[in-house]
Image (cartoon, rainbow, N blue to C red; front, side, top):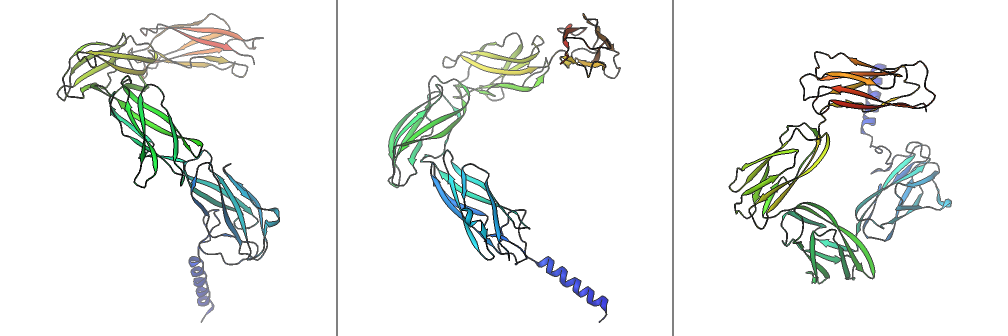
Length: 450
């Protein structure tokens, strides 16, 4: 057997040994299903990196523990314990921070469930002198139970609800074993929901309180998203639970969509998607009039379904630049819903966009040209008829239009003098254009010496 052949066998054995070796951990969790083989120096080991406290009640301080082991051949020093959340406290006596080889030490954990609810996950870091894994990451898990529970869920659906309509009832029980829900108070914002309470008993004989909700007769139509506070008293202690109510309150005539809203700049002349008015009870109605104000143009026609009316809205040319909020009022011949309101929220695209809207000059930029960009989409070619400043210390120049971009022009401003002023200088750049409604544009300017 020659030396080359022996070398190949040794190499093959080494590769096999390396690839078949057990994984010793992932990242810096420092926990393994099997202990690592003993190596020179300290070696940290946890049976599991998860400390599961199970179900705990709100406002309890729950103890737990985790055991740290040393599978090395030198003393393991626990240098520091750090919790990522103030709700978790770690305790270890100074005298117990050294773990000898093949020894173990218990770390005490306290979890405070105050003001917490549902499944919790807190991280803990254990810093040691293990040269391979100096930081071990542990997880404390728990499920915090409120002192009382709202069933079937802490949610009230108002999808398609009408004024005066009854909603799904909720049942409220204590989760504290052997304790009953003594009292329940509910805080409902606005005049949207009404409720009534009664004593109930579930199938297991546990006493509770049932809550029957209905939409208030005077509730306004439209989207609703509110939070209700339930204050329940168990064993003399009052604790809160929040219940969410969300949906759309509709009348005899449903409005789809309930509002028109756009966060993107909207050009004048843009038509919005039609708003469909649909009789919820199938009884046809007639539109008597529509009032949309001076900035919204409107029309209406029969919809696709029998009894539907489609209201078409269009942003008028008279609409001012910037945010616009209007309410479109539709009058009908139904006595139970004579008026339908359609809110409209849009951001009207400026007739002539100016960037930047303010020019600031200082000592560092006084020798530079400050370019102002003007753009208008309502003319075929933007013309700057004049650009001037009443302060001669500012030089103004109009940049020739590019044939490729006729709707864009530029004005440049620079400080005329070679020296900075002794105090702040405030002025205005006045620009005249051929854009209807934006014939005169003013851009504030300032030389700030600070």
